[in-house]
Image (tube, rainbow over all chains, first blue to last red; front, side, top):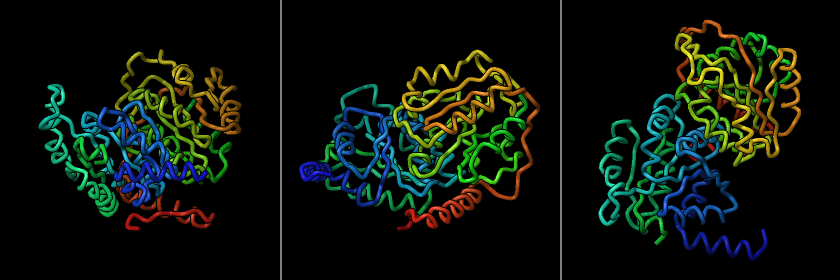
Length: 176
Length: 205
């Protein structure tokens, strides 16, 4: 990598501390399906040479790809909005309880206070209840100074051999 | 052609170091009955995630050649995953689709649009073939050459094979639960990778 690219990558990492968490945790694969809140993070992942970024057609595919990578001994994350988390529930439950394969989902937790879009509201109401129902641990990351939770969640996921969801607010996903 | 004939041909064609990943149901039982020595992971549930799962495995280990054996019902559940394969374009992933328009494990009920889904056409339309290969042999005598050509070419590759519907009830549960099979598979995979000098990241590292 050229010095210019290295400097560019370093500055992007500095601008997005969530990517720094992924790199420190040795994540090598990220799958994503966008939401407006996720674009800064996805762009920063694109600029991170140590992470292979795969766009997927459906968030459940990202869960499946992460599970396959996990079986192969490689760490992967899924970057998606809470709707994608909800539609992936059967896959997540299977990988949590049947296979016991770790992965972390970095989720844009839409529909909360100040989000302002009615069609997101139901997702905020049901997401955590659904995760509780299927036994997937989750953590809320509301602000930029809580981003370290992403790294903690990756460690938790690998220790437990199960998916873990990190439900992120807009400020956290912006990187502060 | 009969499933066991297809499996026997694949067993002869695949180098022993190829890793095989099988979707649930008939695909798994077919390969298990072939008695091949390849390292193999039988996905079991959930249905519909086989393509993405094999893709993730292949992307994680580009030094390994990976073959996914999947039933048409499993693949039909998530056709968009072929687009993901096209997006990632892994040179080490190849797919064999067992096509007969039936959910054999579930008693032989027919798939939606039974027998009319053109999986090869969908893969082609998804630009699967950017650097790989797609085959849809019609005659039994064309199947083996198609499998050989797919294996010889860089991936991603796809062969759709017509297989005769056969009774395929659930097999009795074996001695290992899925999580135990996973551990056995990972133990063998890690040993192979470490022997080759590849890095393996333990979960608690």
